[in-house]
Image (cartoon, rainbow, N blue to C red; front, top):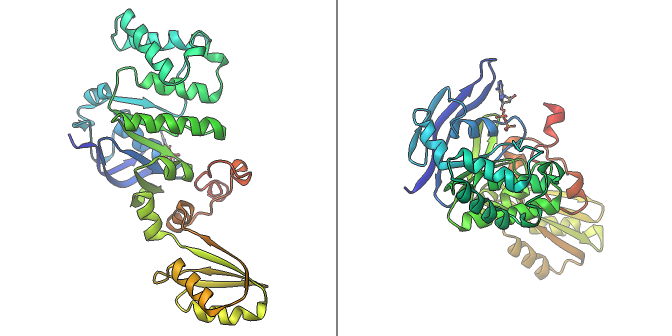
Length: 331
Ligand code: ADP
């Protein structure tokens, strides 16, 4: 089986008339992390719920682990691991008891369940906390335990619905390491996220979802190349040189002048090396030059038309930016 997950023209209209998916198609190879990126309400969870057999599509086809949905949902469920946004953990149980309990539900004998629980606690760095009640766990520990729970039966396909939403930057990064390790062990990971940096860091392939439709699909590099823009900021010694500099970049998509600072958005024919070379040869006196390569944020804004608001963490130079965080306010 080469393709772990296939979605073909999936649509979903809820009973209240909300059209959550408007024809979504993708193919995910075994062993890939697929980043499903979109702001709140774009249809990510609906897609996960269809692919995990929790809800039926209004139309379209899907196949997971070689089984058809929705007709073979019970086979699909026995081949996948799922974590939804709200972890279903019993706060009164210890981490170890929780894993053993779930192992029992899957039909493992108690010795087997205990052995598997110990392995998973170790894998997720929770051995020290094995006998602590889940109710005392931090958000990051709860997410790790939740993912460990989804892995009890060693599924080869894992669905993680916004696994790092609400986590602090350090816990988020720790979880990224664990998700990468799962992929490196051969698992296919369907990862929904509203964090651009998370998709950029983790995903082998990214789909950008907007209002129930996939606007673009490819590797992060392909998306940046296709939809991103490179810009060069030049601080001139003398603002009178601005005109000379403009003449050096006739193919630029835009040139903005703010006093003695020029912001050049390169056009499709430009390369930053070329432009820097021309600047150098023309001996335009400059104080500083900085190049900003295309980012996934540019791609997201271009494709969804939504401004991305800097999150508090990101403003402090730390982690990720919620995709379309600003959009909720205007929607
Ligand atoms: P996301 O996971 O990207 O935030 P969802 O798939 O949860 O998006 O939601 C997509 C759209 O469908 C939203 O407009 C949401 O309000 C709506 N929606 C989700 N679940 C239901 C439901 N059970 N009944 C009606 N509308 C729903």
